[in-house]
Length: 267
Image (cartoon, rainbow, N blue to C red; front, side, top):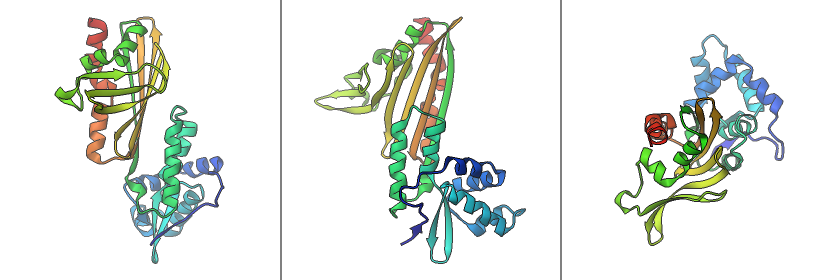
């Protein structure tokens, strides 16, 4: 049984300590190494030959004190892990205020890790996909193209059920569901609406696969020549390299820019 270094119960993560820890380029390089997986202090020192082992230990102590790195001890060896839950907590606070539920889930994951659950944080990734597309069409037309099921199928003709799909549903309200209806109660749930303000904003929370959640926020704003669609997607979970490639391909609206443009400008 291994033990993870823990903060005092009820002790909140210190924002000042967090930012001070990231201020050092050496500590950021250490985090880049730990993104590849847990490493011992000796392994990190070998990858940073211009730093002494003592300096590496000092930098790790700062990262651990800020809650960014957690320590797994296996006998006499010390393995350093990136604390994905802490990074996600600060990410939600300072970067993406539209995904509060995701922060709650990652905080639960943090507790799970600290309770010595048999799991590893190195498999947890946070992906962010940003897209910005301009259209020669009014906001209402573009908003319809990304929220009307029949319109969506024109530019994204991919379904889970194939020929079994009787209809695709997108309930236009906060808490509404987006799903494939296969009949007799069968189907596939895409997600749930978290933000609804036509024709300018729509947010959806989805489960890509077991243990992986995606928050999408699409905004449409009027421009002199038409409108601009901005899409922000944050994906968090245990994601393999192959899954990441698929997510970046099918999860980026820029991949379907011409198809969407054909729908909103050509029809």
